[in-house]
Length: 219
Image 1 (cartoon, one colour):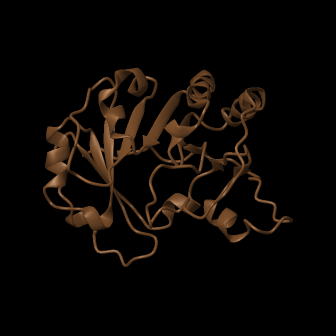
Image 2 (tube, one colour):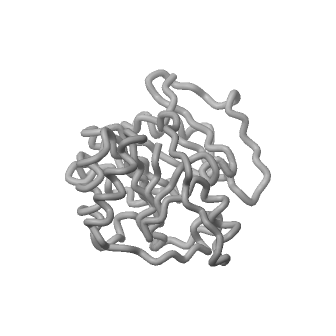
């Protein structure tokens, strides 16, 4: 799956975020975006719109419209929990993943499309999979912290019927996906980008695009 980081801006300041120290100029040229999407759609059927907080991008809806023109499936990752109940936004996508930072308010899902929950490993509690399932979510992704020891083993997690469980291994989101940066540069590894962000001669353009695996695994 292709991943488009449309902005590094976010209204949260999470210590574990891989984007927290990244500063990349944003391009708002829709013609250039259309050309890029048309080229990448030859090799990719799916794209994930993410950030930062993608809903903060000033032309968010224009980007989504462009993605829907060129890709078979368009997915969204956001920390805005209100999206789970907003069919006007959620229905634009084939799936939505909501990143939860607390569990004081878990909105019930408006089931127009599959809505997944995403949490950090340190916030995991045994009750959460069934809680999210009861509220209408299609699955739960547990993200290992890039800077802390990992404590969860996938085979120890519950596997409710008709509910997906995914353990996002530390570093995997940095290294196994082709990405479009906010400046419309395409890279084959975010890890490489982080290593040479300050090197003006570093060429991070991807040489070969490849398809990735599905977003979630069902049980």
